[in-house]
Image (cartoon, rainbow over all chains, first blue to last red; front, side, top):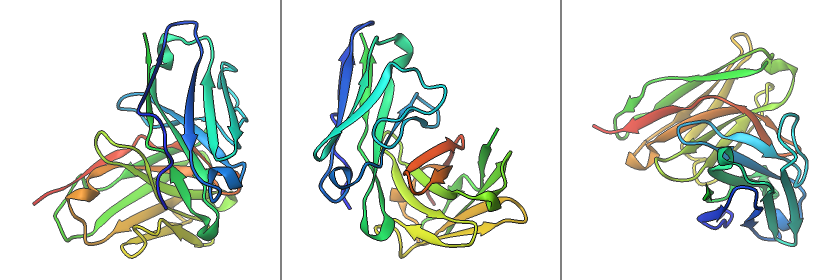
Length: 111
Length: 119
């Protein structure tokens, strides 16, 4: 099972919006609505930001939103803030054998 | 508040077996959810290793399956990871996490523990 494809980097100025993509196949991202997104600050453990493509856990700001089209899931961060600068990872259910696969990660820089 | 804490040796010799334990507090493993291990080599991305239910049912990443064993001890509210025949490529920060298996989310995560494979 190959890792999901994410752009290595993304950036935006404070207040702007940035979208990070996560591309898989019809066997993972495209086949199921079970994509989750994680935020990871340097030296820290990942934190769940989005699950089931577009649902936000309690406590996650509504500036974070998720969507999916075909084999590509997306995380959008609106109204960028300095504390949003972090690495972001997507994760998808991958069907047969109950596999889970992560994306390679995207480093978000707030300019 | 659910909390997870990894523990185990920080240095393992090549060809030996890596052993880690995750202790869960604030929630009984027997109450539900799957429990999983994820690793992150230095400067690289996350890799799912495998997950276990309190009944002992397990799922493993096929790329590691031949070397991985995950077990659970409900009496101690712990679950464990064993990875055999390690090489330098297994050097990573190892995280444990609670897993919603059906919805595919990992939350919360332990703080992680760095395991270095070196002689």
